Length: 298
Image (cartoon, rainbow, N blue to C red; front, side):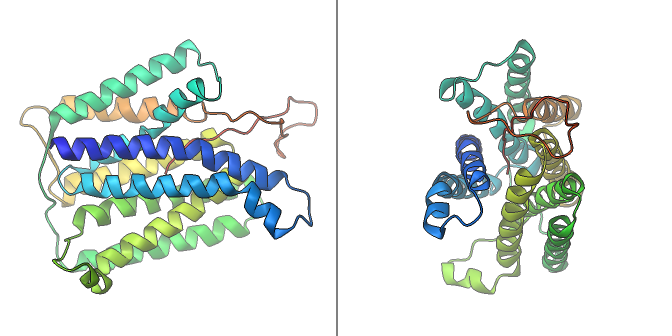
């Protein structure tokens, strides 16, 4: 179980650091004037590419953790990357956290500790070949939400749809990783439907989350993504995949899960890269300009 916990911790650290870099990249590209050359756009979006690389590290670490740990623990740890982002924003960006944010950080740490102490390690119960088709069907749903959210002319409503799609996609990655049976030869993964479902969910979720951040307020995007990404796989894990808590520790695990998720949502958007203020298109013209901020997921 120790190696699994280390993997979950590494995933949270990698995702948390990637968040700041991705947000900086998105904002720099969005701020470029029309007609900017492709070379300049690539240069402006370089931090986003570095963030994606860190996302890859976090993804591999979370997949390794899911080999032995239940979904409710690993997904909560991944969601807690927002706490890592909040801490990094203080150390690197000079952001000052209020008392409420400090309390939320402590709640997240306490919740994760509770989950780690109450979770039982073990492989998932594979529900049968039908699970592959359900995973692929879920990826199709995420793709549909991605299209609907992208073409919606109402940017806020589109951001909500994209956030839910991203959460379902990231959750699908977790479920697929939990179910994936690693074959003796890596090339055999090319014929594994679960592996294809995992890749599909990962790509769709990453695109949906990036578009959601560009369209909506980060607190809304992060809250919807965290809630969907964490709650749905946790329920599936407990109900269908054999994820368990230590005997007699169910209430403690449930409280720790709620505390972790609540603390993560409370911290959403606390990492705010320095930069010019931007007015939200939906705000009243007389209101204050809104400064975009970010948090991951992802």
